[in-house]
Length: 101
Image (tube, rainbow, N blue to C red; front, side, top):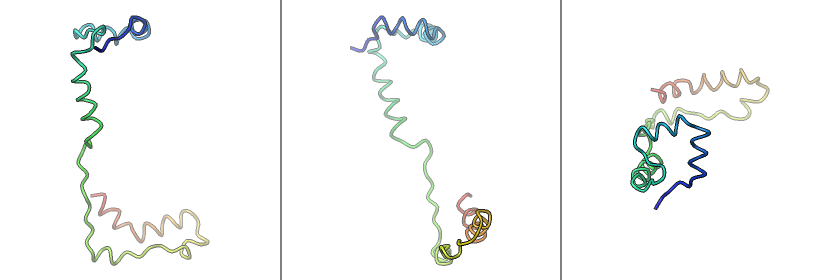
C-alpha cells in the first residue's frame, strides 16, 4: 500500500498550497495513492522507453559518400577558427543542407 506520511503531506500543504489544492479539486487522495500507482507506473514506463518522435535515417547515397574527402590536419594548420569553419562549410555545406531536410 502506497501512502504519504503526515509530515510530507503537511509540508506539501505549507510549501506548495496550489499543488495541494490541485490534488484536492481532482479528488486525488494523497493519503492513499494505491489506485494511482499502476497509472503512474505505466506513464513512467511509456515516457522513458520510447522516443518522442521516430528517428528518420538519412540515407546518403554511395556516390555522395565517395565524393566526401576528410579534412586533413595539414589543411587546418595555420588557419584561424573562421578560416577552418569556412573550409568545413565549403567542403561539407551541401551535405549539411541535405541532412537538415
